[in-house]
Image 1: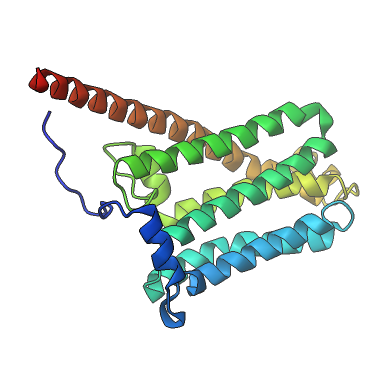
Image 2 (image 1 turned 90 degrees about the vertical axis):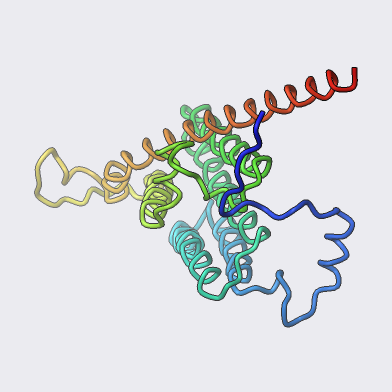
Length: 254
């Protein structure tokens, strides 16, 4: 089986784990990956998300403000990394883990706030984690430097989703807005009372936000399904290639 041609964005050779730990320990202050500006923004996101969770059960205004700031900073860290030349694998994983954990924590709260739909929220958590984990792992085993480097010949949907920062921001922001709207619906029950078609005045403003953002929610989670399926196919393809190589090696030894 011919080897695939090297592609732009391929990862460097593997580094021994002990050597990597030693390098991280011996970092200088002036070039410390832990202190890169985008990673500092990532830490701020974690703190803001943690504070929002603290207020989630009794102070919706503080919770929404802090949660929203944490999500908005998600659009800043990547820009800072590219502008400052401080992209890093640690930063990429920190960003993804923060996204997954903050959304999952909010969905856990929604499971208790809407017990009749708890199984749906649990499914969304499982889909979110599994699709992103498998996508990240499939990127690593195929030698990609970033999980966002998806080519159109692998998946046109994922390529468009990850390679256009405006689309990525719109989809992620709309999905989070839908969940935040569901959260606020438990706290705000006064209708807007404004004239409009389709009984819009009978809705609260969180309900209106939920209706407006729901299409984005459905598309975003459909993309998660595509991501899970494509990652599964990539991993199976790697398994097939490795098994074929092992068989070829056995035949040569005989």
